[in-house]
Length: 308
Image (cartoon, rainbow, N blue to C red; front, side, top):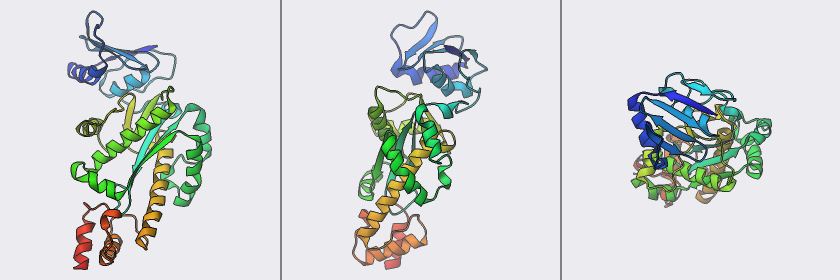
């Protein structure tokens, strides 16, 4: 099974750079480069034709489909729609999905979750009623989360405010997201090994090149690169992202309950005026905002102004 894409010379150069870490020493005659990944081989020729082979050929080809002419295909499975970022049958794949919550909230953690949903578990996950996770109430998500935890391979990175504040001066919030997503994905891959997913889907908060640049600057190792897709509203493309979104939200909620108990008052989620008032009250009581809040938010200065 294979597929051939016709790409431009500039695109060919981009592909050569992308696959450089996977390049084989001896490329076939006439080839610009050849690369061997865990589930696919990629061979590119001077003519601009790029051959994808192996069990994961669809996943690799789809990565470049946007910038390719109509492909020549030899395949038995449903094909990738030309120009589509996400393949047409993606919802039926075995996928690790990841999502994060808390980035826009002053109080509480930045919480990122990754969940593996195999083809065999898709019907079970559908039965939970999480297809449109963004419409679920917090109470419903609290009911669903324990079932996800019990059955599906997962990992959660819960950056509490003190850790977040220690990292933030050297990493902006999107860098912290990228680090958290990559770490969570790596842990789930470890848990399901030697099984490999058909793909990984990250609920998009940055362009793919920017995401990987963040990880490079942070000197992350290993960086999860193979078969990675990015899209906004990822829960609409695969149930794994919906499951990850629910898990991240429930961990965030539980953390907020614990922090509110420590503060002796309810800490609101968000970054509005109510947050400023609560932060000011904490300052007046002599409590350490570093333990409860993301200090780089403008709310810190607003709260101090209210106190003064």
